[in-house]
Image (tube, rainbow, N blue to C red; front, side, top):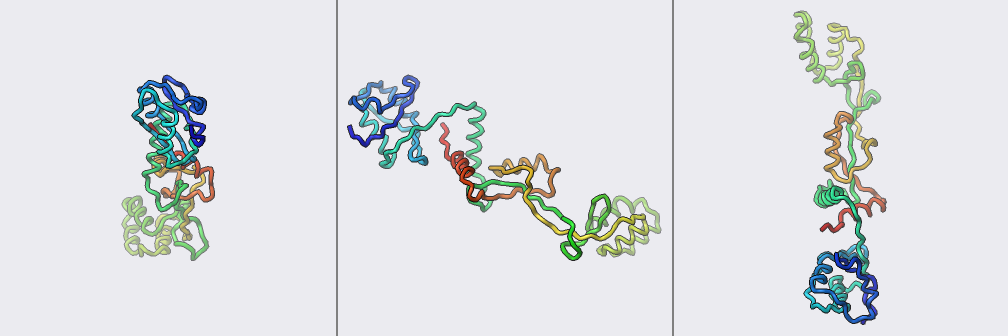
Amino acid sequence: MSKKVPNRIYIQTEEFEQVHLDRVFSSDTLYFSEDAVETALSKLVIRINSDLFLQGVKSQMNTKATVENTLNEMKSCFNGSEEVVPMKNIGIPQEDYDFLKDLQHELLTQDTDGQADPRYWGILETKEEPSPEGIGKPVIYMGDGCTMDAKEVVDYIETDYLPYSNDETKDSWDMVDKNNLNDLIEFMHDSFGWGETRIVWLDTQQKVSEQTGCFITQRACKQHIEDNRHHYCRPQTYAMTAWRNPEFERLLTILQNIKFQ
């Protein structure tokens, strides 16, 4: 028997819980029934060099199957590799198994959004923050933390107030320059007594929310936004790469390469 044969290979079947082939090197043959050998090899899952997998190896073998022939046939599938490490079995509920299988499919088929692995998504918010005069855009502060641009103010007045105003107020409104913030403020002061209204400046800023952490699929990120939009300001998905994060990168690699039955 060749000494280069891997010394750690396991065949697992319902009949033989674990057959350690390294324990029978002193024998020339293994006596399995043909069906048992077929079953063992068809269910065999072997991991090689941490990144190459073999699943579903089948062989037409006689009732008397030699150890050397069996191992050599397996080795030929590994492109000459001699390091053969058995894949560990992990017992998980069917619901979790289905979840992982679906997650893997999503990881392998989703849009990358132009980002390299290890990829994840966050929630990008677009907010308008107060800024010094001349920076950003001017809007009208309406009170209670509410700001409106000229168009929003005009719609607000014409929808909620003007229909219930007297003719004098309506005539005054006709004379207002609807694109001039100062004219709009003067009208609201004179006609409605809204003395708190004034011009403020807002600068548009975008920032990734720190509330949720990361989403490993864009689908999950979109679903979160749909369910919790009221907690965010103009939210959208935003893809990023976890730079120099080997633990996260290895986790994604494992999820992407699990071999499901």
